[in-house]
Image (tube, rainbow over all chains, first blue to last red; front, side, top):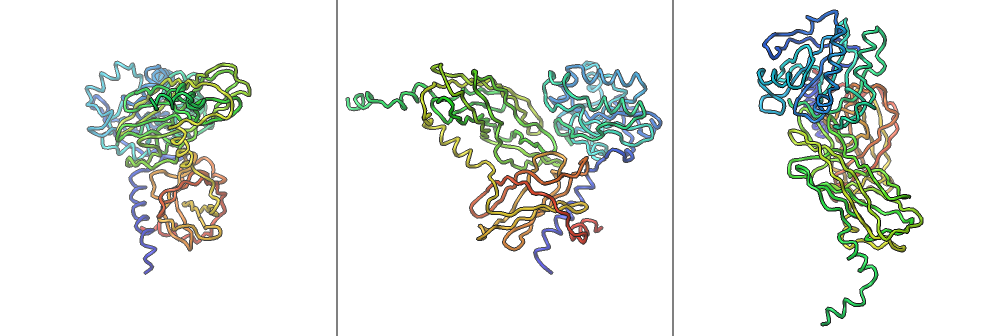
Amino acid sequence: MNPRRLPVFAAAVFLSGWTAAFADAPPGSPAPDFTLPDTHGQPHSLSGFEGRVVVLEWINPDCPFVKKHYRSGNMQKLQEQFTARGVVWLAICSSAPGKQGHYPAAEWNTLLEETGSRATALLLDPDGTVGLAYGAKTTPHLFVIQADGRVAYNGAIDDKPSVNPDDIPGARPHLAEALEAVLAGEPVPVARTTPYGCSVKY
Amino acid sequence: MGYVASMKPATPILALAILAGNARAAPVRDGPVQADLISEVAAVAPGKPFTVAFRMTLDESWHAYWTNPGDSGLAPSLDWTLPEGFSAGDLQHPPPTAIPTPPFMTYGHEGEVLFLVTLTPPPVLEADSVTLRAEAEWLVCRDFCLPGSAQLDLTLPAGPAPAPPHPVHADVIRQARENLPRAPADWRIHAEASANRYRLLAQPLGDAPETVSSAAFFPDSPEVILPAAPQVFQSAGNGFTLEMEPAAGGDSFPARLSGVLILQGPAGRQALRVTAPFSKSAPSDITRTERNAP
């Protein structure tokens, strides 16, 4: 046996473990189904929303990038605008217990009220299973799932990676563009972008 | 008495250095970061480009980000307000460090970090001194992230060429410049792509340089490789290969691998600026077989 091969083999084994833990949900692929409780203890399944357009928004209320879009009202405006047109908007928190952004359900309800969130529900994913299944990297990281259950968009809220709310008006609103396209039955102009934000605190 | 006497014929350069004070913007602390601006020259000469450094000193366990931050993060930025006729070049980042935060990998900087910028004065300078103002913004993280900012004003006297070097900061900036990624003059580097691997192949040109014991590649853009996937280093003849896992989400296949390649050898760490065009590799790709094995 060639000893030089050993490091490669070891790395390959490690790699397959790594890829299993952290998956991806590329545009065009079937969105992984899940069931998670909301902050009132109600379970929600993605498959329960079949036939509707669904937004998944990864959230950590203490992340400066999330604050940018909530303090400016940008996120709530998008939530309001698109839920009014029948879109289901699920905010998901994958912060692990003890990590930043992890709150008990009751505290979440206060936070949601304070921020004026217009999401359909906030789902708790403290063990990170759903976040890892989607490859959710940052807060925020956004996914649009079209009515047939396929991923239509995966990426950033817009094209200006910053924590400055002043950048919002001049940014290209990737998420809003994707939603408009899906609702109009048209192809999404940019279906994948690099999400920006804090890392999800798995 | 001798001391006082020796002060009298002080050279103009020394006088300028004293006048320039520290040639440094008063440091600003914001959370875990101290930021300042230092200049390699003690005085600005008309039309002579010079280098300043935006210096971040991070508290232990905090990191700032490279231009491509990896899985998450954001590089610092400077917004200059300069006197009429001055121009500023891009922020030059030092070579990145891989900072694992499982399941993620970010690319960034720890400790004292110098970002160099070339400033070019106009051909004629009428004022006795110039004030260079930079509004710096950054994001630093450990297990959570904090944005920060500082307004940094650096005032330097203006004088005739040649611009006198700053007695302390010229060396600090020269060292930072020497650490910047350099062109790989003594290596031939190309890239291969197979179904699920990117591979950099590096062979020394001419006499074999010192043995490289490990290497790491940092692409200029996100969505080129998966930052957290291990990179596999193997010696090959006098050179080496480095295998990486492509980003699944890339909208398009890149034409080349461009980024910074960091080599570790007996003489320490060196950073190379690499732009390697892709050639298709043979389909009988050994790594592919291994990776698909159960």
